[in-house]
Length: 220
Image 1 (cartoon, helix red, strand yellow):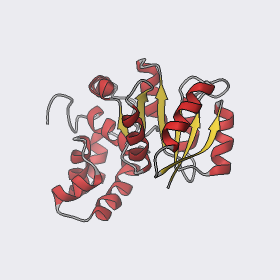
Image 2 (tube, one colour):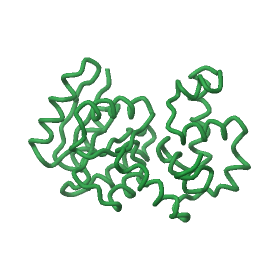
Image 3 (spheres, helix red, strand yellow):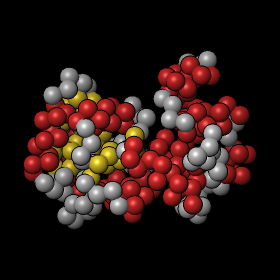
């Protein structure tokens, strides 16, 4: 069972997301928070597997809550759900460590699947934002603390291969099939890749790969 914390300052949105997610046999909403401070407190108490956060909330906003949840000794994966697709919100959420970013008008099935993907460590990004976001991140060369040259020295050949496949949008299972290895082997490599790149999620690893020219937005 995937335990989900929902944080949104609008009661109707909280109720709607709760009903949507609780209707799934493998999802359980364990907490509903109306602001960022409450979300952090509930995360301490309930230990959710995924936190679904709004960006704009009173007190601590979703970006700051994301930063704190993902920086914990036991990080809580974050899926940001918002009505705003402004670049500063998208970039802020991803830089804070969010594993996924969706607009609230996404199809319900897409939202449910996004929660599952984030819980599984796969991450997700609204399809309408993906190319624009990656292109913008590719132009922001100074944001990531680990340069491509340094990472090339630290990544093994197999880790580099996995990073390239990850940047193509492949799941752990698809990467394992491509490389003819066990899924557990892919997970072990990813666990080593993230700290080497100085990132906290596989979505950030993809952003890093585009930003540092390991892959390009319109190329292979």
